[in-house]
Image (cartoon, rainbow, N blue to C red; front, side, top):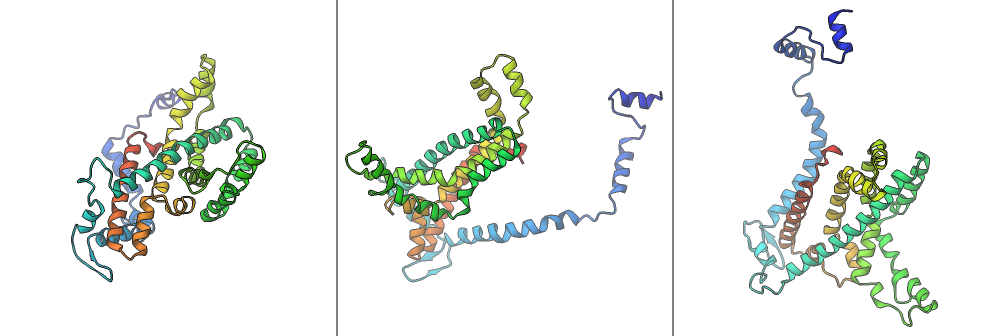
Length: 322
Protein backbone atom coordinates (compact mmCIF):
# COMPACT_ATOMS: atom_id res chain seq x y z
CA UNK A 1 0.00 0.00 0.00
CA UNK A 2 1.23 3.48 -0.88
CA UNK A 3 2.22 5.64 2.13
CA UNK A 4 -0.40 8.35 1.42
CA UNK A 5 -3.21 5.80 1.09
CA UNK A 6 -2.09 4.09 4.27
CA UNK A 7 -2.13 7.43 6.08
CA UNK A 8 -5.61 8.24 4.76
CA UNK A 9 -6.90 4.86 5.79
CA UNK A 10 -5.56 5.45 9.29
CA UNK A 11 -7.66 8.65 9.54
CA UNK A 12 -4.73 11.07 9.54
CA UNK A 13 -4.75 14.16 7.31
CA UNK A 14 -3.10 13.59 3.96
CA UNK A 15 0.02 15.67 3.29
CA UNK A 16 0.10 16.54 -0.37
CA UNK A 17 3.40 18.31 -0.21
CA UNK A 18 1.95 21.67 -1.36
CA UNK A 19 2.71 24.72 0.77
CA UNK A 20 0.01 26.88 2.39
CA UNK A 21 0.44 29.83 -0.04
CA UNK A 22 0.19 27.42 -2.96
CA UNK A 23 -3.06 25.98 -1.61
CA UNK A 24 -4.43 29.50 -1.02
CA UNK A 25 -3.55 30.52 -4.59
CA UNK A 26 -5.23 27.41 -5.91
CA UNK A 27 -8.38 28.21 -3.88
CA UNK A 28 -8.43 31.76 -5.23
CA UNK A 29 -8.06 30.48 -8.77
CA UNK A 30 -11.02 28.15 -8.30
CA UNK A 31 -13.27 31.01 -7.13
CA UNK A 32 -11.88 33.81 -9.27
CA UNK A 33 -14.89 33.59 -11.64
CA UNK A 34 -17.18 34.95 -8.87
CA UNK A 35 -17.25 38.81 -8.77
CA UNK A 36 -16.63 40.42 -5.42
CA UNK A 37 -20.01 42.19 -5.36
CA UNK A 38 -22.08 38.99 -5.65
CA UNK A 39 -22.35 38.47 -1.85
CA UNK A 40 -23.62 42.04 -1.49
CA UNK A 41 -26.25 41.45 -4.18
CA UNK A 42 -27.39 38.31 -2.41
CA UNK A 43 -27.80 40.21 0.86
CA UNK A 44 -29.40 43.27 -0.77
CA UNK A 45 -33.09 42.14 -0.74
CA UNK A 46 -33.07 41.32 2.96
CA UNK A 47 -31.08 44.46 3.74
CA UNK A 48 -33.60 46.55 1.78
CA UNK A 49 -36.54 45.05 3.66
CA UNK A 50 -34.71 45.60 6.96
CA UNK A 51 -33.98 49.21 6.00
CA UNK A 52 -37.52 50.09 4.85
CA UNK A 53 -39.53 48.30 7.52
CA UNK A 54 -37.25 48.63 10.55
CA UNK A 55 -34.47 51.18 10.31
CA UNK A 56 -36.44 54.01 8.69
CA UNK A 57 -39.52 53.76 10.98
CA UNK A 58 -37.27 53.45 14.00
CA UNK A 59 -35.23 56.47 12.89
CA UNK A 60 -38.40 58.50 12.28
CA UNK A 61 -39.74 57.60 15.72
CA UNK A 62 -36.46 58.58 17.34
CA UNK A 63 -36.41 61.91 15.46
CA UNK A 64 -40.03 62.76 16.28
CA UNK A 65 -39.39 62.10 19.98
CA UNK A 66 -37.34 65.33 20.04
CA UNK A 67 -39.94 67.51 18.27
CA UNK A 68 -42.04 70.22 19.85
CA UNK A 69 -45.83 69.94 19.88
CA UNK A 70 -48.95 71.58 21.20
CA UNK A 71 -52.62 70.79 21.03
CA UNK A 72 -52.84 71.64 17.35
CA UNK A 73 -49.51 70.98 15.66
CA UNK A 74 -45.97 69.73 16.01
CA UNK A 75 -42.78 71.13 14.51
CA UNK A 76 -39.27 69.74 13.97
CA UNK A 77 -36.87 70.60 16.79
CA UNK A 78 -34.28 69.03 19.03
CA UNK A 79 -35.49 69.21 22.60
CA UNK A 80 -35.55 66.76 25.47
CA UNK A 81 -38.82 68.13 26.85
CA UNK A 82 -40.76 65.04 25.84
CA UNK A 83 -38.42 62.74 27.77
CA UNK A 84 -38.57 65.12 30.73
CA UNK A 85 -42.36 65.05 30.63
CA UNK A 86 -42.35 61.25 30.64
CA UNK A 87 -40.44 61.21 33.95
CA UNK A 88 -41.99 64.39 35.37
CA UNK A 89 -42.24 64.13 39.15
CA UNK A 90 -40.76 60.61 39.26
CA UNK A 91 -37.66 61.60 41.26
CA UNK A 92 -39.25 64.28 43.42
CA UNK A 93 -42.05 61.96 44.62
CA UNK A 94 -39.82 59.02 45.57
CA UNK A 95 -40.36 56.58 47.24
CA UNK A 96 -43.89 57.06 45.92
CA UNK A 97 -44.05 55.76 42.37
CA UNK A 98 -45.00 58.18 39.63
CA UNK A 99 -47.35 57.29 36.80
CA UNK A 100 -44.52 56.23 34.50
CA UNK A 101 -42.86 53.95 37.03
CA UNK A 102 -46.23 52.47 38.07
CA UNK A 103 -47.08 51.79 34.44
CA UNK A 104 -43.77 50.08 33.76
CA UNK A 105 -44.12 48.08 36.98
CA UNK A 106 -47.60 46.93 35.94
CA UNK A 107 -46.33 45.95 32.50
CA UNK A 108 -43.34 44.06 33.88
CA UNK A 109 -45.64 42.27 36.34
CA UNK A 110 -47.67 40.85 33.46
CA UNK A 111 -44.49 40.01 31.55
CA UNK A 112 -43.14 38.01 34.50
CA UNK A 113 -46.43 36.18 35.13
CA UNK A 114 -47.02 35.33 31.47
CA UNK A 115 -43.39 34.34 30.88
CA UNK A 116 -43.32 31.93 33.85
CA UNK A 117 -46.71 30.41 32.99
CA UNK A 118 -46.03 29.99 29.28
CA UNK A 119 -42.62 28.50 30.06
CA UNK A 120 -44.14 25.90 32.38
CA UNK A 121 -46.93 25.00 29.94
CA UNK A 122 -44.77 25.24 26.83
CA UNK A 123 -41.99 23.11 28.26
CA UNK A 124 -44.45 20.43 29.40
CA UNK A 125 -46.22 20.29 26.03
CA UNK A 126 -42.96 20.26 24.09
CA UNK A 127 -41.52 17.53 26.33
CA UNK A 128 -44.60 15.38 25.81
CA UNK A 129 -44.52 15.83 22.04
CA UNK A 130 -40.78 15.23 21.74
CA UNK A 131 -40.26 12.27 24.07
CA UNK A 132 -43.62 10.61 24.64
CA UNK A 133 -45.13 10.76 21.15
CA UNK A 134 -43.10 8.25 19.19
CA UNK A 135 -44.47 8.52 15.66
CA UNK A 136 -44.00 11.52 13.38
CA UNK A 137 -47.61 11.52 12.04
CA UNK A 138 -48.96 11.68 15.57
CA UNK A 139 -46.54 14.51 16.42
CA UNK A 140 -47.74 16.44 13.37
CA UNK A 141 -51.38 15.79 14.26
CA UNK A 142 -50.93 17.00 17.84
CA UNK A 143 -49.02 20.05 16.61
CA UNK A 144 -51.92 20.88 14.32
CA UNK A 145 -54.26 20.65 17.30
CA UNK A 146 -52.07 23.21 19.09
CA UNK A 147 -52.01 25.58 16.11
CA UNK A 148 -55.68 25.45 15.09
CA UNK A 149 -56.76 28.19 17.56
CA UNK A 150 -54.09 30.45 16.05
CA UNK A 151 -55.83 30.43 12.68
CA UNK A 152 -58.11 33.16 14.06
CA UNK A 153 -57.11 36.67 15.05
CA UNK A 154 -55.90 37.62 18.51
CA UNK A 155 -58.88 39.91 19.04
CA UNK A 156 -61.42 37.14 18.40
CA UNK A 157 -59.59 34.74 20.71
CA UNK A 158 -59.41 37.42 23.36
CA UNK A 159 -63.09 38.34 23.15
CA UNK A 160 -64.04 34.65 23.32
CA UNK A 161 -63.08 34.69 27.01
CA UNK A 162 -65.74 37.28 27.90
CA UNK A 163 -68.79 34.94 27.65
CA UNK A 164 -66.91 32.41 29.76
CA UNK A 165 -65.58 34.66 32.52
CA UNK A 166 -68.34 37.28 32.76
CA UNK A 167 -70.57 37.73 35.80
CA UNK A 168 -73.28 35.66 34.11
CA UNK A 169 -70.78 33.61 32.12
CA UNK A 170 -70.41 29.87 31.84
CA UNK A 171 -67.80 29.58 34.60
CA UNK A 172 -69.83 31.48 37.18
CA UNK A 173 -73.01 29.59 36.29
CA UNK A 174 -71.20 26.26 36.60
CA UNK A 175 -69.69 27.15 39.98
CA UNK A 176 -73.06 28.28 41.31
CA UNK A 177 -74.91 25.25 39.98
CA UNK A 178 -72.36 22.96 41.66
CA UNK A 179 -72.75 24.84 44.93
CA UNK A 180 -69.11 25.90 45.03
CA UNK A 181 -69.99 29.59 45.15
CA UNK A 182 -73.18 31.30 46.27
CA UNK A 183 -72.77 34.38 44.10
CA UNK A 184 -70.88 35.28 40.92
CA UNK A 185 -67.14 35.87 41.18
CA UNK A 186 -66.37 39.35 39.91
CA UNK A 187 -62.59 39.08 39.56
CA UNK A 188 -62.77 36.50 36.78
CA UNK A 189 -63.20 39.26 34.18
CA UNK A 190 -61.75 42.75 33.82
CA UNK A 191 -58.99 42.00 36.29
CA UNK A 192 -55.30 41.09 36.39
CA UNK A 193 -56.35 37.44 36.33
CA UNK A 194 -58.29 37.75 33.08
CA UNK A 195 -55.47 39.73 31.44
CA UNK A 196 -52.83 37.16 32.41
CA UNK A 197 -55.10 34.28 31.35
CA UNK A 198 -55.74 35.78 27.91
CA UNK A 199 -52.06 36.58 27.35
CA UNK A 200 -51.04 33.03 28.29
CA UNK A 201 -53.68 31.68 25.94
CA UNK A 202 -52.45 33.87 23.09
CA UNK A 203 -48.70 33.37 23.37
CA UNK A 204 -48.04 29.88 24.75
CA UNK A 205 -47.42 28.51 21.26
CA UNK A 206 -44.53 30.95 20.83
CA UNK A 207 -42.87 29.07 23.69
CA UNK A 208 -43.84 25.56 22.60
CA UNK A 209 -42.37 25.67 19.08
CA UNK A 210 -38.74 26.67 19.82
CA UNK A 211 -38.51 24.41 22.87
CA UNK A 212 -39.87 21.48 20.87
CA UNK A 213 -37.36 22.22 18.11
CA UNK A 214 -34.49 22.14 20.60
CA UNK A 215 -35.73 18.94 22.21
CA UNK A 216 -35.98 17.16 18.87
CA UNK A 217 -32.25 17.81 18.37
CA UNK A 218 -31.27 16.12 21.63
CA UNK A 219 -29.44 12.86 21.07
CA UNK A 220 -31.62 10.18 22.68
CA UNK A 221 -28.51 8.13 23.52
CA UNK A 222 -27.54 10.82 26.06
CA UNK A 223 -30.77 10.26 27.96
CA UNK A 224 -30.36 6.50 27.74
CA UNK A 225 -26.79 6.81 29.03
CA UNK A 226 -27.97 8.93 31.97
CA UNK A 227 -30.66 6.39 32.86
CA UNK A 228 -28.21 3.50 32.48
CA UNK A 229 -25.82 5.33 34.83
CA UNK A 230 -28.50 5.31 37.52
CA UNK A 231 -29.96 8.80 37.10
CA UNK A 232 -33.61 9.20 37.93
CA UNK A 233 -36.09 10.73 35.55
CA UNK A 234 -35.93 14.11 37.29
CA UNK A 235 -32.10 14.02 37.32
CA UNK A 236 -32.08 13.26 33.58
CA UNK A 237 -34.53 16.08 32.97
CA UNK A 238 -32.55 18.58 35.05
CA UNK A 239 -29.02 17.63 33.96
CA UNK A 240 -29.56 16.55 30.34
CA UNK A 241 -32.81 17.81 28.83
CA UNK A 242 -33.02 21.31 30.29
CA UNK A 243 -29.37 22.30 29.53
CA UNK A 244 -29.69 21.07 25.94
CA UNK A 245 -33.08 22.80 25.53
CA UNK A 246 -31.81 26.17 26.76
CA UNK A 247 -31.56 27.74 23.27
CA UNK A 248 -35.22 26.95 22.61
CA UNK A 249 -36.22 28.22 26.04
CA UNK A 250 -34.36 31.46 25.39
CA UNK A 251 -35.85 32.00 21.93
CA UNK A 252 -39.35 31.34 23.24
CA UNK A 253 -38.71 33.69 26.15
CA UNK A 254 -37.61 36.46 23.78
CA UNK A 255 -40.79 36.02 21.72
CA UNK A 256 -43.09 36.09 24.75
CA UNK A 257 -41.35 38.92 26.61
CA UNK A 258 -41.13 41.26 23.62
CA UNK A 259 -44.73 40.67 22.52
CA UNK A 260 -46.27 40.98 25.97
CA UNK A 261 -44.26 44.11 26.76
CA UNK A 262 -45.81 45.98 23.85
CA UNK A 263 -49.28 44.44 23.98
CA UNK A 264 -52.11 46.87 24.66
CA UNK A 265 -55.14 45.38 22.89
CA UNK A 266 -55.41 42.31 25.11
CA UNK A 267 -54.78 44.33 28.26
CA UNK A 268 -57.38 46.87 27.18
CA UNK A 269 -60.09 44.30 26.38
CA UNK A 270 -59.56 41.92 29.28
CA UNK A 271 -58.74 44.69 31.75
CA UNK A 272 -61.86 46.69 30.95
CA UNK A 273 -59.70 49.65 29.90
CA UNK A 274 -58.82 50.07 33.60
CA UNK A 275 -55.37 48.42 33.74
CA UNK A 276 -52.34 50.45 32.75
CA UNK A 277 -49.59 49.30 30.43
CA UNK A 278 -46.89 51.10 28.51
CA UNK A 279 -48.44 50.17 25.18
CA UNK A 280 -51.79 51.49 26.35
CA UNK A 281 -50.20 54.79 27.36
CA UNK A 282 -48.60 55.15 23.93
CA UNK A 283 -51.89 54.35 22.20
CA UNK A 284 -53.73 56.95 24.29
CA UNK A 285 -51.14 59.62 23.51
CA UNK A 286 -51.40 58.83 19.79
CA UNK A 287 -55.19 59.10 19.97
CA UNK A 288 -54.77 62.61 21.40
CA UNK A 289 -52.30 63.44 18.60
CA UNK A 290 -49.41 63.77 21.05
CA UNK A 291 -47.01 62.05 18.69
CA UNK A 292 -43.70 63.41 20.07
CA UNK A 293 -44.26 62.25 23.64
CA UNK A 294 -45.69 58.96 22.34
CA UNK A 295 -42.48 58.55 20.30
CA UNK A 296 -40.40 59.28 23.42
CA UNK A 297 -42.33 56.60 25.33
CA UNK A 298 -41.83 54.18 22.44
CA UNK A 299 -38.07 54.81 22.43
CA UNK A 300 -37.87 54.20 26.18
CA UNK A 301 -39.93 51.03 25.83
CA UNK A 302 -37.62 49.85 23.05
CA UNK A 303 -34.59 50.46 25.28
CA UNK A 304 -36.15 48.42 28.07
CA UNK A 305 -36.95 45.56 25.68
CA UNK A 306 -33.45 45.61 24.16
CA UNK A 307 -31.85 45.57 27.60
CA UNK A 308 -34.03 42.60 28.56
CA UNK A 309 -33.13 40.71 25.39
CA UNK A 310 -29.45 41.56 25.84
CA UNK A 311 -29.56 40.18 29.38
CA UNK A 312 -31.13 36.94 28.18
CA UNK A 313 -28.63 36.57 25.33
CA UNK A 314 -25.84 36.78 27.89
CA UNK A 315 -27.15 33.57 29.47
CA UNK A 316 -27.35 31.33 26.40
CA UNK A 317 -25.65 31.34 23.00
CA UNK A 318 -28.59 30.95 20.61
CA UNK A 319 -26.29 30.70 17.59
CA UNK A 320 -26.32 26.95 18.21
CA UNK A 321 -30.02 27.02 17.40
CA UNK A 322 -29.77 29.13 14.25
